[in-house]
Length: 296
Image 1: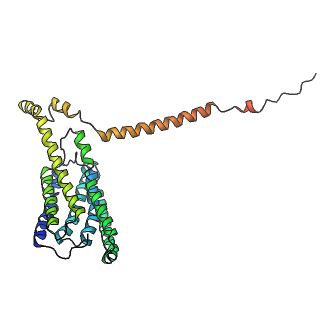
Image 2: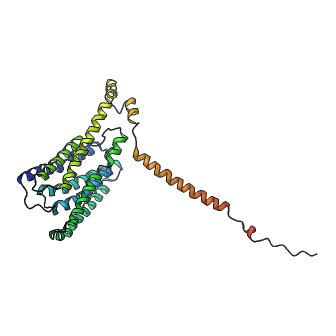
Image 3: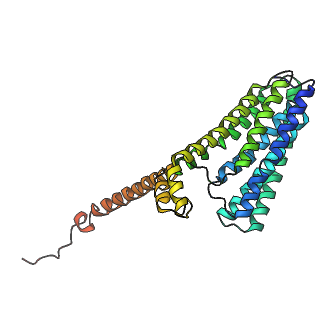
C-alpha cells in the first residue's frame, strides 16, 4: 500500500479518538501498580515487548503518512508501556527505583534513535517506489505487538481463567483505542490491511481476556458466595485457595522440564567421566615391572 495522499475528516476524527484512548489507556494500570505496589499477574515481558513495538509501529505510520493522531499514537504507547515495565521491575523484581528509571530512560533514548534512523533510512527508497523496506517494518511491528499477548494465556491457565494484576479500565480503554483506530483506517481513502488486521486482533485479545474472567466469576460463584457468608474474600477462604491452586502453570512446567533435561545431561556427562576413570589402564599393566637379575 502506498502512502496516503489525503486524509478524510472522518479518519482524522476517529484516529484522534483512538489516539486519545491509547495515550491514556495505561494510566489506570500505572496508577494501580503504584497504589498497590504490586504487579503480580502483569507480565513484564508483555509491557517490554509492547514498548519495543512502538519503534517499528512509529516508523511505519510516518512512512505511510497516516493521519497525525495515528503517528503520535505509537510514541505515547511506547513510553507508557515502558513506564509500566519499569514498575514491574521495581515492585515485582525489587529493583531500586533509580536503577529502573535510569534503565528505562536509556532504553527510550535508544528506541527514539532507532526510530529516527529507520525513518531516514527507508524514506529515499520508498519515495522511489521501493516498498519492501516499509512492508518489512510493518510486519515487524505487527508481529512484535501481537507477540506481547503471548504471556497472557500462560497467566490465565495458571489462574484458571482469572485475570489478576491487569486493570479492567485499562482493558476497556485499550479496546476502544484499537477499535477507533481500526475505524480510522476504514475511513481512509485506502485501507491498510496489515495494521487493520493488527487492530482487529488487539480487539479480539482484549475481549477474550474479559470473557475469560467472566467465565471464572461464573465458575466460582458458589465458592465466593460461601466465602462471603463466612466474612472472607475468595482468596482468604480455604476452599477458594484450594480451587485456585489447581491451575496449570505451564511456564513452571516448561522451566522444570528444561532444568531436568539439563541435569540429566550433566549427570550423563559425569557418568561418562566416571566410566572413563574406571576403565583407565594402570601404568603397571602397560609397562611390565622390572625384575632384578637373578643369579643362577
